Amino acid sequence: MGVRRRPIPNVDATPTPIRRREPRAGAAAMASEQPLTPAEINTLVTRAVEAKANAYAPYSKFRVGAAVLLDDGTIVQGAPRRGQP
Image (tube, rainbow, N blue to C red; front, side):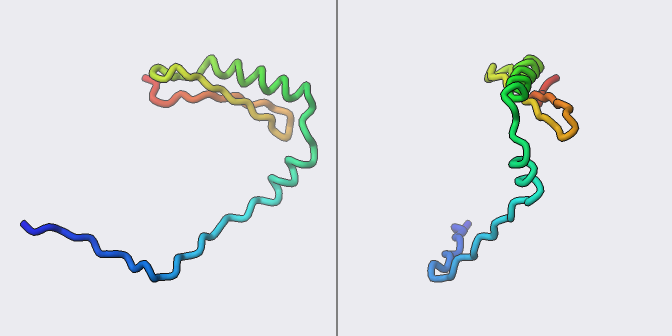
């Protein structure tokens, strides 16, 4: 059996420019329109800590939770549940 060799890349070639995605204007505009009040921040932190109780982390034991405030005032909570039997 012979040794397989990889082709040597052309180091003199011009690199391909990186195309960056433009940020969505709507999301940035919404975020800057109405900053969260301290009461809303406290509520979100409390709800995220509550969501942390539902996290499944049997190996790392590092539980995390999240809470998101929607435009209509609804708070959505979440926690990772990956790999749970």
